[in-house]
Length: 127
Image (cartoon, rainbow, N blue to C red; front, side, top):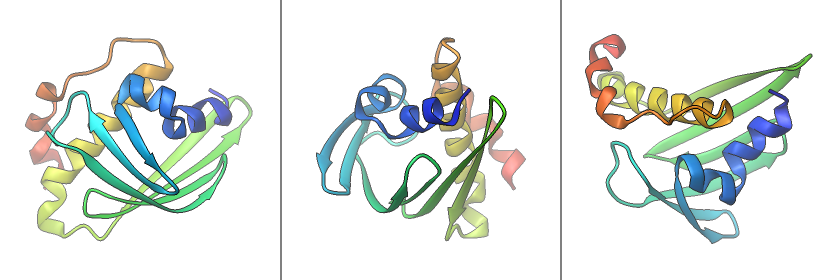
């Protein structure tokens, strides 16, 4: 997919609502109410840096997340860096981010969205 399509799916409220959850707030401070997933309540997000359509740095889920996108031909490469994760927490954080990446991919490919119920079993892969 072109980088603009992937960027839009990850940053536009209308699209986030379709695969992640309802977005509220503004001025770089947002809240997302997930439609499914490991976090039952609202998720607070603070945007620290945004250089569309390639770089996004946010505070989310107790840490810093960097999202870098590059396009080569018609392929968009997405690099997701989750900073400040205690090694003992990787087994719980890993499946959550894998789940979200799988959801945005399914959304972009117009496939059914995966359910969180299928992901907790991946915990051992992140130990």
